[in-house]
Length: 210
Image 1 (tube, rainbow, N blue to C red):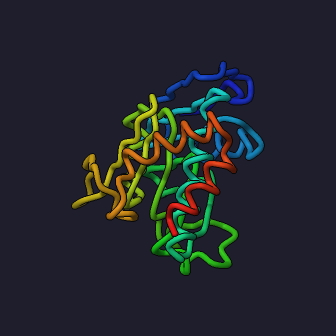
Image 2: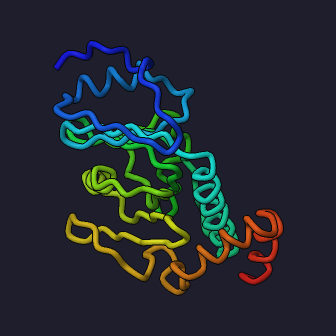
């Protein structure tokens, strides 16, 4: 397939998504280069299907807040972490995805000094966080990249997907925080941050976690 319409000419309204099918990996890489890094869209590619999403402004807050919550809990537990944000994760010829947020936790020490993410060199992130994602393409991409745990926050609910024998299964328990009721905590804390302020919520959380 040859791309005849400049990708920058495609305008997405906030909250919309387009799918492009029968796209080779080389075309995907070309489109990524054309899109550049300074943009407000997210992409997911899996075996020839590319989805380009333009999130709503209100979409940005929950995943940022959730990332802050995760880091606050890890700090309280004196555990290391590295935040790689929306770094593009790739499995050449198969999958590529840009998480809303991704973190290294168990493998935090493995990525210190990393400035160019290459999953042939480094392990996949231990946790990917997505907000308002309903796409199977996104989960298929994470599955191919072997990300152990994916959180999807939507409609004030958190769903946890754990990788088991190569497939994702929804779970009420997190690998990362097995002793915490994460699916209950996160929606409550996100709403508290929105209603009362993120910094106040995080200060109170840190006191509770002592």
